[in-house]
Image (cartoon, rainbow, N blue to C red; front, top):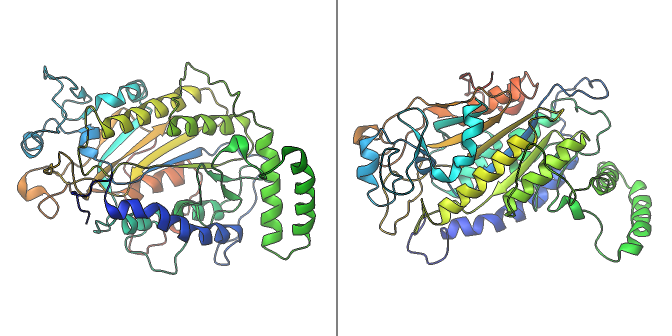
Length: 431
C-alpha cells in the first residue's frame, strides 16, 4: 500500500518501480536475444504476410482511475463516494460533464477526440476488467499482468507478447526488427520476443560519438561480434541491421495523413514514430509504449489537473494514430491497460488510493467497438471488492486472447498464456 501523505507525486513504491524494472530488465533484454528451448517449432510464412495486424501495446503505469475515464454516471453511489472528484453527469450544468456514451456510461471530456473512433465503431471500452492478482503492489501487479499470470512462478521470466512473437512466424521472413519498445529497457511484456529491442529515440538510434567516425566504428564492431559465439553473434548482427534500418526511415520528416495531429508530449511523439514505423512496412509486428504518472493519490485532478492532462495526451494521441493509419496497408490494433484501478472512495487528499478493477481500451478496424463492454458489478456496498473497490468481471487475458488469436493470427493461446487454470471467455471483442 502507498502512503498518500507523501509529498512527491505517486507513492514511494511507484517511484521505485522504474529503477527496479530497469535493473531487472537488463537481464530481460539479454533473455530476448536467445530463442528459448521450450518454444514450439514454427513454419515460416511467405516473404511477407500482411494479413496479421500490427499490435500497438500501451501500458498505463501507476494504476489508472477507470471510474474517471469511463464514468458510470448511472450509479448514484459513484457521486456519494466521490463528492469532490466525480465527473459530473452529462446533463449537469457543471463544467467538465461526462460525454454520454450509452445512457449509463460517459467519457471523460479530456478524451473527446476519441468520440469519432467510438462512433465509427473502431473503439471499444472494456469496463470492470483487469488483473485477477489481488495485490495492491505496483511492482507485483505489473509483473503478473505482463507475464500473463496471477502470482507467476519465478522461473517464468518471459512476457505474454514476447511469447506470442516467439511462437509465430515473422510477417516478413528476413525482418531485422519484429518488435520494439519505444523507451529505455525492455519491459517484461516483450521479454522472450525474437528480434525485439528497446529504442528510446528511433530517429537517433545508433552509436554514440563522432558522427564522422561512427560508420568506421560500426564496421569494426560488426567484424568483432561476427567472430563471437551464439546467441551474441546473431543478436549483435541484428542490432546493427536495426541501426541501418531505422536510419533509412525519416522519422523527423514524417507527415501524418487523415488530418491527424500528434501532440508534442512524449506519448504523442511516440505514437507518431509508431505510425512512421508501421507506414515504412519493414516487418515490425508489435510496438510497446509505457506511459507513467497514473498513481494519483493526491489532488488527482480529474477535470483540471494531473489526470485530466494525462487523459488529454492519451485521447489526442490515440485519435491521431487512428486517423493517420486508417488508410495504411497494414492493419493495426491498439490496446491500452493498467496494472489495477483506483479505490472507489476518494481520499482526504482529493485523490484515490490503490484499487482492483480497472478497464481496457481496444481500438482498430478489427475491433467490434462503438460500445462499452462490461458485465457491470455495481458500486453499492455489497457489490464492492473487499468493500472498497470496483470488482473485476472480465479477466484482461480474455480481451488479449481474442486479439492474439483473431487479429494477430496466433491460434494457440496456451503458448501466450500458459496458466493451466485459465480458460478464455471470448467476449466478442473483435469483429
